[in-house]
Image (cartoon, helix red, strand yellow):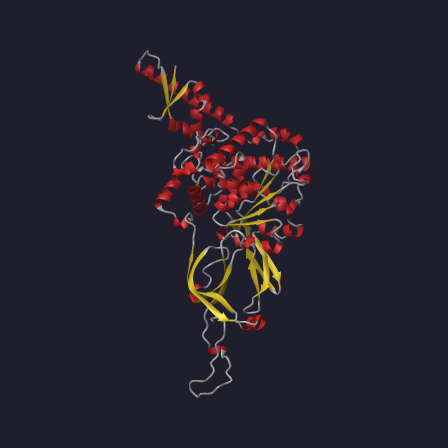
Length: 573
């Protein structure tokens, strides 16, 4: 056994029988590591607990695998006679372990290092679509109806932002933390399970089943060396990934306080049993909680609805309040959606044999905003897209690409309303949250810099998070007062119509001057403007997508038509 000392019984030179002492200065040493290999929870048979087996690594195999990774090990199954267990039990007992001679990480097929050229081409084609953010939100948990705001928050957390390290002294985290708070039956746990299956590295735990030690780190005595050693918890195992905590409100207050440092500084400081060190916990936290009494009361503030302190609430970038509101029209659509989902997902034996065809999709083929189900991205491709964006895309915040004064005035007004109306306490962290969410939105488009529409999407998420946590009586007045910060589609349509009218006016003036010079008397019946010039003028006004405007009713009612073959906008008189 590699872990036991094999002392000689006789000297080969002088035939002396000892006693022999170990000469540590003239000994040759080699690296040694012992790991516990555990079954994946998904592959455990029903009614069984995951089995574990000790694995011994020597020499160059040491420190190849990290805790929490899925590995494939080739080795020799060894057994050794255990004297103490034999004496205690009265019959021979052998302890077993695996002596490894090869280890291979079972990296996911969607990891950035395993992407093929065809995958990269598909990903870049997806990123060229101006509506890719909307398609990603539709593809997040497609079996759950509605909840666009929550799905956008999940998408931003999965893509993540860019961590910043100022002069190697002050580190600003780049992970987006999300808290889902709402009534029972609003698919909070289902969304957490979807994030666990989609994220490249995820650790799932529940509030009652997780303690402070289980989430951060524990100290235990190594049975081999009899020394105190550290063992990382869920937040350490989820390093550079996502940690999902369900039933967040059921945790003890002492356990919840222990993750304060991990959520903001993204490190865990340990000072136990003579061990003083710091562990990395660079992970996003997505938590789900229920209100006091089970249901969310709109007549009360957020602090009266949930037993969470201000320090922990401020560490969440986005707060999603999910309410189960009685609405006959929405309830009918939801029931139809769930029914058809079951019909499409569970085929009968005839459909499985091919003797019958699956039922036709009716309402399932269109989502809540009327877009086609063909826009959904396949889940395998979405996982590859997220991996590629996390590995290769680092959007930068540049001075002239977004409105800085808008963020400053928004923060001032948010602080003012927060102090007067209650709800979520607004602090400086929320400015960083706006920056993080805008970078995550830019990552969805695989852009190298943050644009104004990314900042608008981030501000919309922050305002939705703030207003939905207020009392029902003040929500409408808050939406009215913050309307100037949320740029709507109607404002963009009016601005684009004004730009187009100005371009047509200039074109008509040019044609009139040209006819006077050529002494022609015919009045032009058709005016044409190049589409590229119109898109360039729109970009100057920070509007980057005019495709929806050219397909809209306002465009046609104003007398315009689009010729895509010649790429011109035409107006007939």
